[in-house]
Image 1 (tube, rainbow, N blue to C red):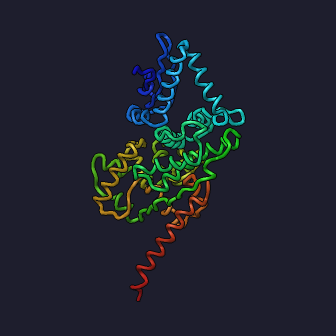
Image 2: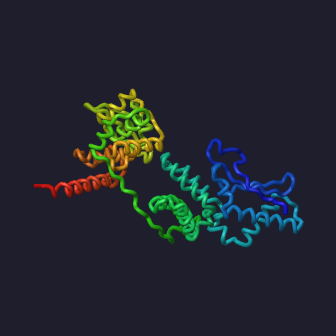
Image 3: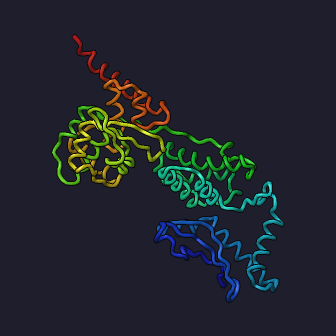
Length: 381
């Protein structure tokens, strides 16, 4: 049997520049009559799995049936006739399923999310996180159109997210929060009849508790002798641990344009890449020593590689708690609180929008005090 519909990936070679390309259906009607239908986007690595999803294979089967019907009725095999058959079938037989308040429910959910995201003033890290979630939506093949936004399909998407068994409840809840943001917008704008997330419930999970390093552990890392990449990784960690900068903000740090000298200390005056909130934090002497070592231009290493080297340093120095970029920032916060800096000022140093976020560090500090007391009191004479 002659095949009239085939799946084509990245016809316009966009993936070389953007990392993703369109998945299209090429509907061959007759010589000179081909209709191209976009059914998704994917990366070169995963487009085969996406194209084999039920949502795409069902479209291929459906369009083959449409062409077969046109041939049986001896219709002229033109794009306009093909469109007429498809539209007649969908609108004539399933009008209640494809229209709501005059809105076409066959439009792409992911495309709606992308367009809305472009209109928001989001930080680059937030955009990156949303793109990861939208990619998972496309790969699942379960929430392709607005008509697919049903409680049953959202539950199926949740099950799909759990299939690799590598994502925690907390991570999966983060995916759902980002998807729900857009289903809620659609419902509020009366484009869909219900927000499917109002009718489902998933476990939220808890974030893995991070343990900041003690001052002695930071000094141990600071004073250790390393060479090459380990040395640079250690220096970057020390800089974060004595300024409170997150990795992404450290990468953007420019001493000439972002610092002010007040009394005996330089201060970094900047805005967080993740949230856009302002921060004002001191460059403490160990961090300044790092800057002087590199002539005030930090040697940037990728986040993944930096954490890899920090894990090696952790093992070498036999440090019990995890050593990562983010632990450096956490350790700075607890260090400041330990030395009696008011929590409101620590909030400003870290660039937190809400003091509740900063209070997490105060709770950790309180727990450390309790642990120390429990260890010391039994030996008190």
